[in-house]
Amino acid sequence: NAGVTQTPKFQVLKTGQSMTLQCAQDMNHNSMYWYRQDPGMGLRLIYYSASEGTTDKGEVPNGYNVSRLNKREFSLRLESAAPSQTSVYFCASNLAGLANYNEQFFGPGTRLTVL
Amino acid sequence: AQSVTQLDSQVPVFEEAPVELRCNYSSSVSVYLFWYVQYPNQGLQLLLKYLSGSTLVKGINGFEAEFNKSQTSFHLRKPSVHISDTAEYFCAVSDRDYGQNFVFGPGTRLSVLP
Image 1 (tube, chains in turn purple, brown):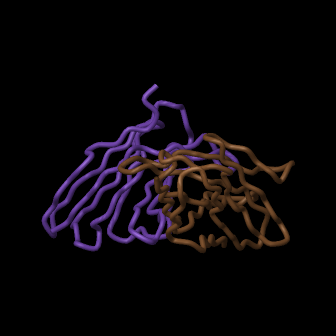
Image 2: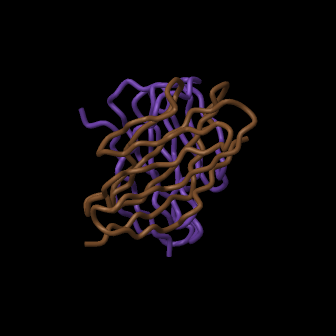
């Protein structure tokens, strides 16, 4: 049981380049999330997918797009990277659906630098 | 909408001393409460959670937290810390009633000194 996996672990981009961050979970969870973590700001939700086939914006969605490819996979795309998107990105999942008592399980993170 | 405040951004403490990490929240509805720990260069792991029932919740690694509804607090405590407890700790709240409203606090960096 790998839990939540993310690729790549590290990435350096130039301003304007695009890339996709991949996330997969093998726990048969319904909901998946993308967060960014910046110093002193905790985790901020970018997008989430409450169930397969649905996606919704979180607190900071601008500059990002997501795809819930199937129940296991949830990808995050930066179409035109900006230095302000330099951050550590975490994917998470939980069983919840719309019941929030289930804790989230996190991947190891992707450290992204945009020059 | 909920919000979470962690009053201390950094807490240094000597090994074997007790520690309390403070968390306050605001919400117009009933909530579930969580504490997560993040070790360097890793993702977040659940320490403990409060769903209902006893207001004192015990978690992994000897941590416990107490829910105080009147003070809207969920402080994390450990009676005797170890060097290995050095990490960042996040308090989080989610809305009982609806939606994907997990909100995380800004985090408290606990440094355990020898």
